[in-house]
Image 1 (cartoon, rainbow, N blue to C red):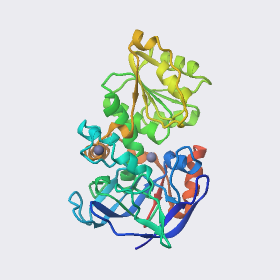
Image 2: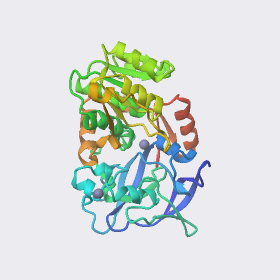
Image 3: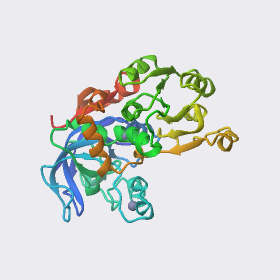
Image 4: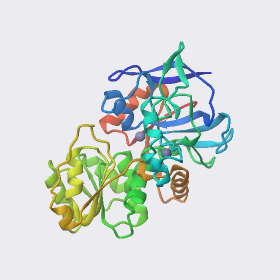
Length: 370
Ligand SMILES: [Zn+2]
Ligand SMILES: [Zn+2]
């Protein structure tokens, strides 16, 4: 079949909407008619080369839609199901999966690097030449073929824009608080970086009863926004990791239990670590450049039992956590729809990135098949 899709020809290039061929789903694969896709900073990392990506590729990894066809052997979903898409399918049988760490599946990560699906081959092509998938999903398109394990069924009354965000930003932020850190009522939490992921973490900390929840950002208007999501306090980036950490420690009564770092910048990661109290943890979820190095005061690690926790995809288990998150959204306890600040058609994907990079947008969602 033919699909319209936003193609990145080469690193550093522009996204161009083109017509491509999409092969039918193979064994354990699913064809999804896409309804919505968020525009995420990770897509931009692929465009500017911060993260190496095989090109030409169809970007987008924050999508939701309706199952249109299933390949042989598919049992988890059927035609007509509404699904949110996970970019972290897992094999279920490797060493990491057996340790209940599906987000670190040692079969999926190498397959993702090939730009193919789980078997390393691509379903996208153009005049017979391969076009590569991005994070198994490629949601900047009308439709996509994805691994069955990427499809999580959702209730039909969930807006697709919200379901799409649960596929990446929301799960990354919420899961970091609930799963990686295990924040408890009364814990002191700081959120460093108040974009879509940071605000998701903030909503999760507020929902679980953390107090105080301190928002930290380099832009004052983002702190105002964070307060409307329930932040009890705001700290403006103070020019250095040390000065910012001191302001967070002051605002929190002597340091936080968890500092959630969502920017991927080493100086912000250092600030997260320095803002913790005894036994506190810096929870690092932002993706740094590959060559980034952290320098931390070593003595305080044993002396104060300070910790650094890494978190990918919120240490989540999508088939369990997407449903929990969406149920709390429907109950009014996670106002996820408030993250969506802009709706654009696929053709305006470039403007979506401009809005994201200027800081004007909370989250841009592309309406597909609108
Ligand atoms: Zn993302
Ligand atoms: Zn695995």
